[in-house]
Amino acid sequence: MFRVQVRSGIKHVGLALRDPEAFAVRWHKGEVLYAWPVWVALFATAVLGTTTYGMTMGMLGDTTDVIYKGAALTIAAGLAWAIPLPALYILNSLSGSRLPVSSTLLAALVTVSWGGLAMVASIPINWFFTASIPHAGFLLFLNLVVFAGVGVSMIDVFNRVMRRLEPQRETAPTWWMFLVAAVGSELFYFFELFQFAN
Image (tube, rainbow, N blue to C red):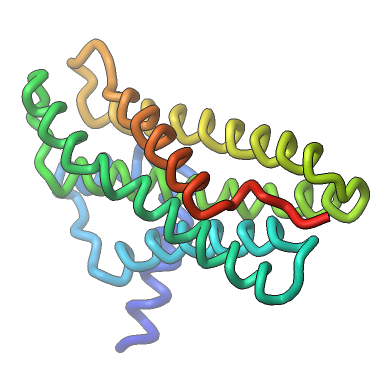
C-alpha cells in the first residue's frame, strides 16, 4: 500500500514538473484529489534541490562546511518560501481572487518544487566553476547568477500557474516571488551562505 502511494506521488510530481499548470488546474477543478504522498513528494523535491545545491556551495571548505551549507540553504529557502505564504493568500484574496487556500498552496508548492529541480540542474555548473576557479569573489558572482536564474524561472512558473487557475484576472500575484527573494536574501546573509573559503 505504501509503495503504491509513493509511486503515485512520484508520478504526480513528474506531471507537476512537466506541466505545472495542468497539474494545478486538475486539483482546482476537482478532477483529482492529490493524496498526502503527492504533497510530500513536491516538498521533498524542493528540499532535495536546495540541500544538494547548498552542499556544492561548501565545497571549498571541509566536510562540516559542506553539510552546514546544505542544511542552511534548505532552512533559509524553506523559511523564505513559507514566511510570505500567508501574505500571498490574504493579499491575493483582498485583490479579488477567489482561489481557495488549497489551490493557492498547491501553486506555491509546485513553484518551489520546480525551483528545487532547477537547483539540481544548476549543480554541475556550480561544481565545475568551483573546482576550476576557486576564488571567493567569482563564486559569489556565479551563485548570484544561478539564484537569479532560478528565481526568474520560478516567477515564470508561478505566473503561468496562477494565470491558468484564474484566467479572468488581468495580473498574477508575482509580487509574492519578489517578497520570497527579499526574505531569502536576508536569510542567506544571516546564514553566511555566500561566504566561501579560499
